[in-house]
Image (cartoon, rainbow, N blue to C red; front, side, top):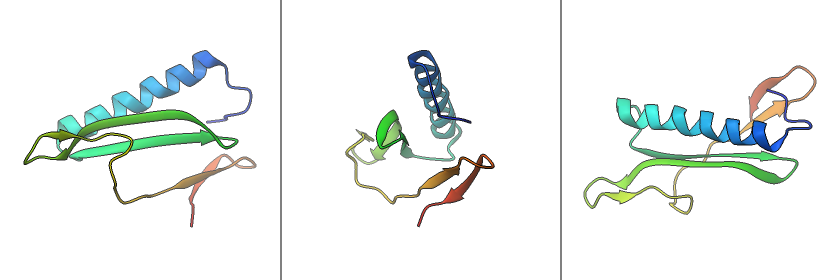
Length: 85
């Protein structure tokens, strides 16, 4: 996906797509709780959370919930994703 010149509508659509995807992951049992954040030129354009952080207390997962972090970087030349170290 190309992030150049994204309209507010495209960003909202991306937010909704990510929310649907992570909701499905939680509903299927593949994940208990997670957050996905997308940054473009240093600006956060997506912040989506789903599920619970602690099933014993039913505490919801939030953007501030500590968790393990994984990152991917989009290569603009060939539109591939690579792990960010």
